[in-house]
Length: 184
View 1 (cartoon, rainbow, N blue to C red):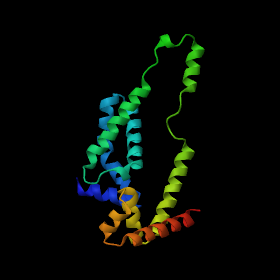
View 2 (tube, one colour; view 1 turned 120 degrees about the vertical axis):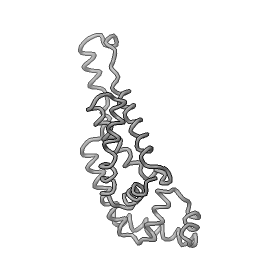
View 3 (cartoon, helix red, strand yellow; view 1 turned 90 degrees about the vertical axis):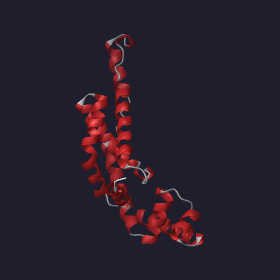
View 4 (spheres, one colour; view 1 turned 60 degrees about the horizontal axis):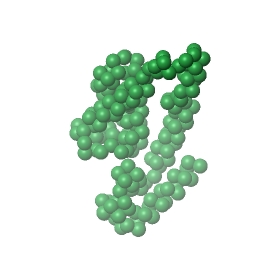
């Protein structure tokens, strides 16, 4: 994997939101071309590209740092573009008997995009969480990272950091309480 991609992912996961912006700038043209190759429509490709980066940001903690970033991102782009095509399939005219049926049908389609209020709320919550997380001691941040982003057990964390199991659990508990206090 390109070490700069890996370092950007790690920096973003540790709270530096600008690191993800760099990844977007670096890979937007590639993602757009991939989406366009499936959708064959520039507007749909733009939408799929934006959705790709939103999905990548949401699932970045699940990304395996040992694997190349670009193929992982392009796989998300492919699935997102194909999903957009499936959603866009036209409804056969024979399925609608009257014009009113067609209007009712389109009004009942669910909106798959989150509302602007929800997006703003999520960004505010992310910012608060990142700020609270950055206030924790570095050793506690490492424990949280290994526990939640690497999904390691407390025993595995203790082995990784060279600590005692009970100490790792205690630091995790104190960190959780500190985060709850700050986020109330």
